[in-house]
Length: 154
Image (cartoon, rainbow, N blue to C red; front, side):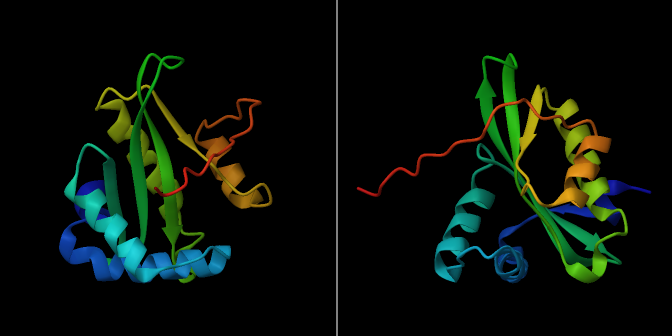
């Protein structure tokens, strides 16, 4: 199986309407706020600037059924570039078929071939299915807590 052509395709500007619809599903299922205008602006900025990271559509029989977003960072602890899986979403009918596992493996291989030292992600504490998948793929907890400060708009 050729991961690039069969399952994953880097997102392009013409994919924005499809990505927005997938994000609408993701945010709705997760109980997150969704502003189409704000998300559209973020997607456009992200896709237009490769220095921010990469976004891939996850395909089934050539049709977009999900997406994964990888953002760049830098870590002295991990001695170089690191990455954060910011979002991974697959439509409900396509879950449990290995697409999520393949998406993570694809990102792991991508990072290994692009001199990225570590990949981080966050998962809801009650999502045991995802936690099990991530553990099988060698993600481990650090014993630390992710904490966030939202910078106020000026």
